[in-house]
Image (cartoon, rainbow, N blue to C red):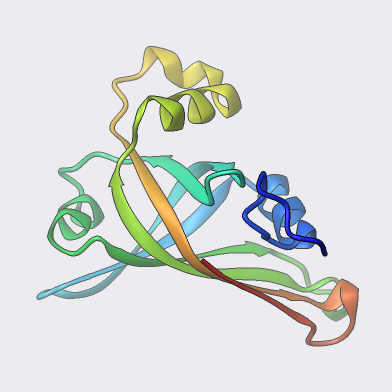
Length: 143
């Protein structure tokens, strides 16, 4: 793929996969150990960012405030080996800006009436395993 500024050179197959889904599993860590939480997200490939909402009072919210380095995954559930697809990623979280809010509300307009605490996950690494491209095929991206 030829690098394009609008996608930060993220492989198109990864962009398509992330856009097809809407829930990620977020992994955080603190002195209490590891923790996972499921969050709805919106994706902006032009910025290489995911936006999600979560209260800062949750365990993962407190842990992100203490340690903004996170990991996450997005997966297609299937029993058919030839259709297995899953994305693993790492990044850094921070409060979302207005562009992140617009992106999230475009995907989830009903959230406009909620008291949202939006976060930005700036993606550092992506690894997509996609058996539809060949058994065990992996696509990698690093910022």
